[in-house]
Amino acid sequence: MRTDEEDFGTAGATPAHFGALKHYDPPLGPGAFVAVVGPSGSGKDTLIYRARDWFSGRDGIVFPRRMVTRPPEDVNEDHISITEADYGRIVEEKDAALTWRAHGLGYIVPSDVDAAIKSGAIVVANISRMAVADVIRNYSRAVVVLVTAPREVLAERLKARGRETPEEIASRLDRADYTLPPAPRMLMIDNVASPAKSSAKLINLIERLHLEVETMPL
Ligand SMILES: Nc1ncnc2c1ncn2[C@@H]1O[C@H](COP(=O)(O)OP(=O)(O)OP(=O)(O)O)[C@@H](O)[C@H]1O
Ligand SMILES: O=P(O)(O)OC[C@H]1O[C@H](OP(=O)(O)O)[C@H](O)[C@@H]1O
Image (cartoon, rainbow, N blue to C red; front, side):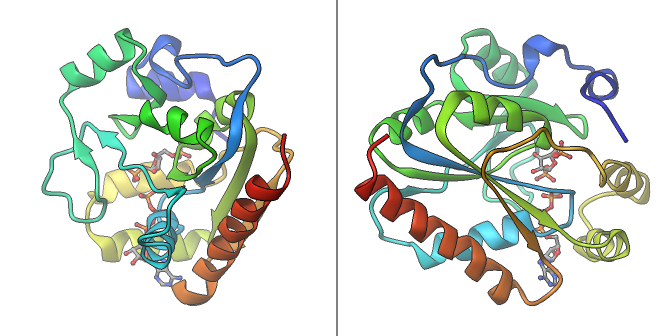
């Protein structure tokens, strides 16, 4: 099992470059933050994109594009490509909802997510398991969706996706059993069936949260 400290070491990051840059007390609401997490290759983006298509045109359900220090030509994720200098500046200016480093890359969930939560939106984002504690601390309605698949399935999917080298895939598989902090609200999706079946569970959760925000004040 890997720890945050080990990850800081391998990613060359420091605690100042990781997690929530702001700590909200009280936590932000009334909207909900749906943190989709799980090992690389489990299918987080696949399920998120299906949910995004399903809710296309619906107000109050937001799928933020992440900023990643990854070249723009990566077709697997609809992301905003940023440089390491951009990443450093955003962290320095505390201009993000969440930041973390993994796989040698810097990741940012943009700060406009916080305004969306304050307006009562449901925000759905693929984040690192290292950032879950910050989501739970900063958002009143934080729900963790843990997407899983057996290790051999992860290995096959990453190989078929073809984005990483065999060494990078091995390093991703090493993180497969990373332990999550306790989360008061969690949905597990064992994503071995069809993407349609698994994404229906995520869609159902988002619908229920949308109703909850509208009908149950904090
Ligand atoms: N239920 C499924 N059945 C078969 N293949 C799937 C399923 N879900 C996802 N995949 C495939 O597995 C691969 C990895 O999926 P995806 O990129 O969504 O994973 P991820 O969890 O977002 O990974 P990462 O954390 O590395 O971004 C993709 O090629 C995708 O098409
Ligand atoms: O292993 P942990 O820390 O949970 O996740 C680390 C990162 O790995 C994946 O990155 P990508 O989408 O493949 O770039 C996830 O999206 C997350 O951002």
